[in-house]
Amino acid sequence: MTSRKPDEQLARNSTLRLVRAAPLATARRAVTEGRGRPAPRPPQGTPPQAELARQARAVLADAARVARWAAVDRDPGAGPLTEAARERAATALELTPEQVSAAWDRARLAGLVELHDGTVRPGWRLKAWDRDDSAVQRGWVALFDAWSLVHPGPADIAPATVAEVIEAVPQVLSLLQLSAGPVLVPTLLDLLQQRVAELHEGRCEVPYGPQPAPAPTSTEPPAAADPVDEALLPPLLDWALDGLAAVGALTRGEGQATLTPLGNWAVWVKLEQICVAAQSPAGNIEQSAEHMLRGCARLTPGPARAEYRAWLAARTVGSAVTELLTVARGEDALLRGLAFEALRVVGAPAEADVRAAAHDTSLRPYALLWLAEYEGADPEDASEVLTREESTWLWVDTAAAVADHGESDLLVRHLESAVQGSVPALLAEVRALGHPRTVQVLVALAAAHPDPALAKAVRRAAFQVHTGGS
Image (cartoon, rainbow, N blue to C red; front, side):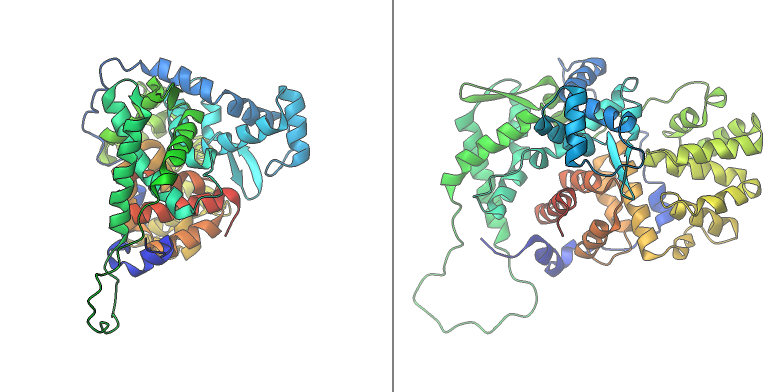
């Protein structure tokens, strides 16, 4: 097995470089484009959305309780959970400190709490938890994608071997989903061994760049790559199945595993590369800014602008701008981008408020782009007003919107809009950025990307951010 680290492998493999720097103005619209085709119907027997959401709420019940406690009972401006806060939460919620820690990690991974400039705030999914089944399902899918962070790999096994098993798990899940019932563990182990062997062969790539002169001819056969240590695969399969069971994706029985209805639905979603999108409410003109923007999310740009104009015409300009900026300051990145699209329709009367919004870290890239376009810059060139850090912040924010509301192929294509010249450079800057959705974006990108080497590097970066490593 090659010992090359994922970041080094990416840097040396020219096919994994970012192929072009697409304008960020185009990336902003990635969420709202290409969503007109009808969604495939789930397999027969899939529970209705309300039942799937009920199951997801049950899996994340403790996480939601801890998130609500953090939103209400903690000191204002509190940061990450400290030992003293953990003890207070355990007493208030009648949980053990260990259960509080586990629930806190799940709440972060599911988007129920977010860290903004060192301050914990409730995530938008927490606010929608009791009324929006789609938000609940998406929160659970985010946890499902991060199962290997919830249930860390064995410390006594090489990380590269653990990473290969993580990469092979989607095939194991596909077999479970296609079987529509219990599958014996030996059958899953056979598939895992086959898939890990394929991944291992894929790692034995031709080196990139100039090569040293060949060694003198020898009668000895060429050395084979280190074989996969198959003795490690049974315990690693048990670890993976336990991790997936821990997030509610499957159940384990006597020598077998079965997907739960929630897990079966999630794997089908992954296989079909679709997401459950929020439904567009009727009567957008009479709705609040948030509901109006959600209603416009599935519209193409032209009809959306007409809807913005109609909504604005029914209100005073000042109150409409204030309401749109309030929504933009929320946790839903899709609504943040759509709010500034609506503000483009407002035009000059919104200038002073948008200039003031440029002092808010989460709004600054959007406000600067708005101002550049307002002052006459071509929308395709407006991104030149952003610093590299601001561009990267906008890239992560847009990726969060795509992960929450778009399809996985859009998230993969979103890589092209990053300003960095390569994936390693992008990951290094994203890790240092401090965007509250970094871990969720990286986990979603790793789950969506078809290239194993890139997915491994992205997953590694997500783990480093989650654990505070470098």
